[in-house]
Amino acid sequence: MVTVQVPAAYGYCVLVAVFSIFVLIWKGVKVGGARKKYKVSYPTMYSKDNDIFNCYQRAHQNTLENYPQFLVLLFFGGLYNPIVCAVGGAIWCVARIVYALGYYTGDPKKRMGGAFGYLGLIAMLYCTVRFATGLLGWF
Image (cartoon, rainbow, N blue to C red):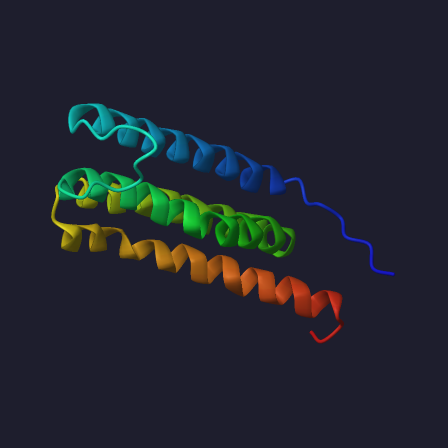
């Protein structure tokens, strides 16, 4: 049996998770505002004739599609190195904001400004793999 002790600095990972919730709420509010502005009523997910609304919706949806992986890497990797994971997670969150702001212009190519978020994910992935291999006694 392996006992895992949660380091005090793990609190930073928890705070980054809370920050990520605010990012999701902000994106949801932005979609709601775009829905009202562009007159796209519920339950329509994507507009057939308004690509700007679709950019708002897609920015939010893409973040939701990637959110489970983000949380897994943040929480498990944080057990190996909470500071690296918290910084990586914060980078990911900020990048998702940049991604959305680029997408909100109506030019989907401008979303790529948020690509630096992958640096945060890679850092968290590294920590998660190190945590797993440490539990298995490989390193």
